[in-house]
Image 1 (tube, protein in one colour):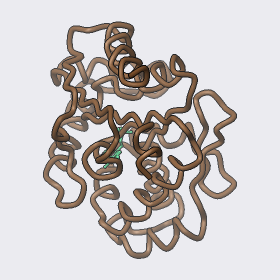
Image 2 (cartoon, rainbow, N blue to C red):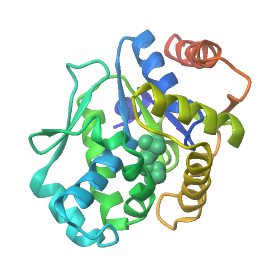
Image 3 (tube, protein in one colour):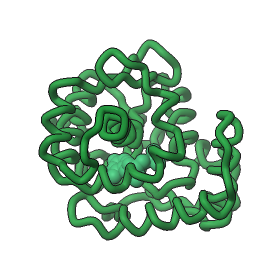
Length: 228
Ligand code: DC
């Protein structure tokens, strides 16, 4: 267990801080995989929306997750995510899903199943970079390198807009900003696994940093630790 957690690198932070991009890049530099835990909450939201489950009914959602199954295909770079046999990697990025995902992520029964699955996934990766909201605080509190990213709302809105546009989705600035602010509020005020800066985490404000600068800073922290 100690060895397992020694080799987990956690990256937490709110939407649009650049978490996913830097986490993938860091994992690539370290020659390992990146676990996108937001993708798992989004996949459960696809389950609710596309399969007709009430997003506030955590109990029936958690049963459905166990029955249908969520898994990553680690052979793909970045890994693709499946809900049962369906590749939902594109679908999870739809604004419709982004608008509801916080409600689903608030359900303790859903969090319980996904936290359990995240810990299982870490057992099959000798070195894992994992990103989300609760990775350093709840899921892997013993991980030796824990990062917390933050950035201005303006900057985060622009980044999310670009991401949506690049993936061919229509996006309205105000709608994206509201979506980010609402999610921040729900994520940081929920009772179970709220977005908090884990004690002892390395805080990086990415507002005025390039992706390369953020990854450089993280890589030097991780390699310093792995080499000692
Ligand atoms: O990082 P993201 O935007 O893809 O996350 C989607 C949602 O899932 C967001 O509302 C926060 C939630 N989430 C969470 O509650 N816990 C995590 N470990 C990861 C994401």
